[in-house]
Image (cartoon, rainbow, N blue to C red; front, side, top):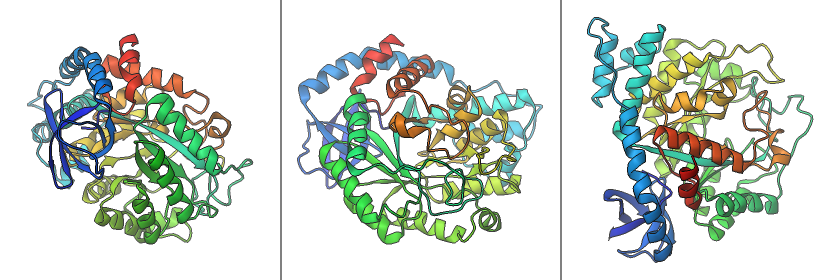
Length: 438
């Protein structure tokens, strides 16, 4: 659980803090030295990130108490398993197994990825939503993503930011611009989890990026996730030492030949070496694949989902490949194909893993966010990049939320989560009053 609500510390044991949220007990690693039992804290991603003034914490929890219970009841009512269809084997057997929280096999996962009939897909979606509720209750992580540069030295054949693309306007935020944008997201809108993202920009050395992370951590209580591509294993170590604790890096496909064909000069092994090093070092990983790659098969997509699980991903990130000015010939996946993949991923994922509704999926379909959250997903990202730069992060055409203010995005997601009975996890003090308005 990672609600951006203060919890009270009930016990400290070494680096582990036991935290109570409305009587629900969770644990988190505590790297802060001034935390004692009885203190109120924010925790994100399994880490204590900030000590909270006790009067403020109690006031916020009083405000949340009744609303929290209402949201829980609403989500519970909307997360019931579908009625079984005993004449639809083997689908029903797989759904029963997954619905009970049991691990499904590769063959069973592959079967789920071939379901096409609308009524059978709906049972798959509803089962995935019930499993999401089983493992995560009504928590929905809401992260801010700040895209600090659209320069990239890689030449991925489908990507609008690739070094050889015809992108007309490149940008690179300065140190001060990055710190100011982070401040707006964290202090202005209450985000407690922030993703820093860029292309593989050669001007941003690991030392520079680490200094930015360290300064943000010095100024704010926030959980930092980084997504800068392949910065090298030493670079990962520098970023971790600076205070980053999560790595967003898709492997994109588990098929080494397909990866090489789409990434000239790069290898899947190099990509995976970063993820495996991060896992070994202690990073939380956010990873997954692209859906609809030319040459992708059901088998390779099933292997993609399983690979994310093998990498112990904290969050599964699967999005559609979309056309860009680089590749106009791409035919994207349909909404139902995407929902099927997200639902299958939820049923195959380890219990602790979350499933993300990506911006690419939201670009593909205006219904993606709500339908994804009702099909097993439990995480979304809001774009906090300054508007003067946001449209230029043109990784694909027509990106969703490119012109929406942070205020409009937060208002929309809070209203949606209120309707679905989810507790928004990373919007801090803005949450209670806006939820009541929703």
